[in-house]
Length: 251
Image (cartoon, rainbow, N blue to C red; front, side):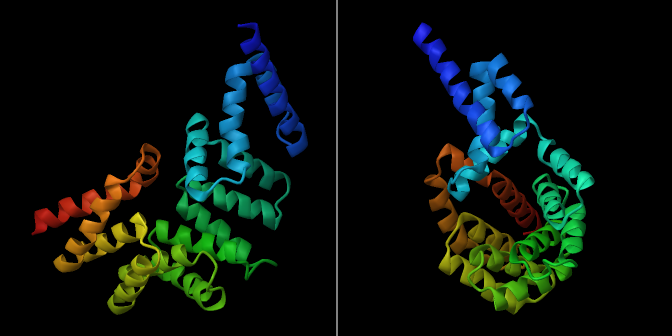
């Protein structure tokens, strides 16, 4: 038991070193030494892992866990930083935090404001603005950003840009371009999200043949999911089930 207690202290010390070196808020030191075991676990999941070099899926899972511990933390800290120093960097940080928190309309406004400054052609800001516009269903506003990214930065987040383009084309009635983009996304990247978004659109336009083809691939992917994969994909899966229920009612 003393060995385990000493290990807790050692882990807390390592976390404390990271607090100081990475410039985190100093209240973490109190939490780490007042509650070595729990404090270290919270710090690890809330701060260290989201900033480490994890793969995209793992980072999303960890970020979700940290957000569940303190849902408003990212937005709160980003607002405070922007209030103190309304720089372009802090504006971008606030926009990203708002988007991840589901405040897409305000996020779109913040991204558009950032695009009027010295970072007008920054691909990350363009992509963030496009994502925010899509999330708040302002597809016409998203298209110029997405088309510019595809033309000027073809290798930048190509899979995500292509999927957002397909959704924007689909929602603005550009059927041929939507189908072409969906097919390209599914053919090149074959992700669950790409298949699911394409299937939702196919159901909406009553393209039963395409929907059935995509359903087979989606079923195969879902069978292979780990619990973490299921959690990450749950929001898209819920939307897909809702689209399927609506199609059955209308069919």
